[in-house]
Length: 301
Ligand code: 0GY
Image (cartoon, rainbow, N blue to C red):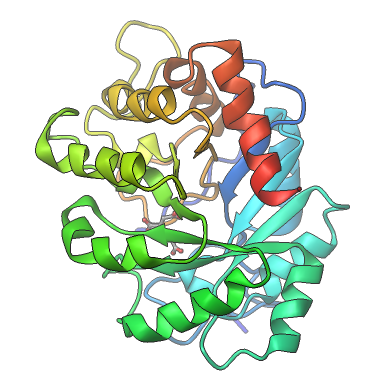
């Protein structure tokens, strides 16, 4: 099948620079996606965007170029609940990838077990309105209870402004809960203002809540321009991400978000994104936890 990508869609960065930051041995890129290729793994009819293809070989090449050992591949909404492209990657990754699936109520126990055998260890609930249609909460809770039995966690994606309304649902989830992209703070608001404090409170009061300190390129207002000639893009995101890494060093994950869906202004150089890491995890110990110990505990133990 032929797919026309969404007008204005930015292709991923073909020649990422070699990061200056040397990743610790065994580092995990714990948030990335695979798109198609659409001719082999068609995009879902209910999708809200059509990406450019970004296949498994290209993700493996990026992994090696940046110096990662492993990937966690998160099912993107453009594939709906058809997890085949992600599973195909997992079975070709020689044990070096795990997956987070999208699962609907109708899925059978045998299909859940097959996903687990392929390397899936979590499922994702998406509450970002431009990406998905509404699913009733009782349906989501029913699915969460089923995957909890497999030892999976639930990844949640939402925007900060929606957290009050979603709080009761999130805090009732019976699994580890991993929040995408710092709960998408609005960076025009202060790091110690009520909105980000609410997110910190969620993590402080609920020891099962983790956060991905990811997507500075998506959150930043100042953007990729280095402020003082160093490889220090996205500086305005640093206080937010660093606050979470420092207060919750054992419950944070990092990932590239390659191939960076739905960016409108610029496509990040993934090498530059890796160089963001030492600004938010400033000690060897916190870097090891963020990049190795935490993802290995959640996905490979
Ligand atoms: C991300 C962010 C986005 C998209 C998706 O599944 C998706 O389509 O997650 C976004 O558009 O903000 O994590 O990749």
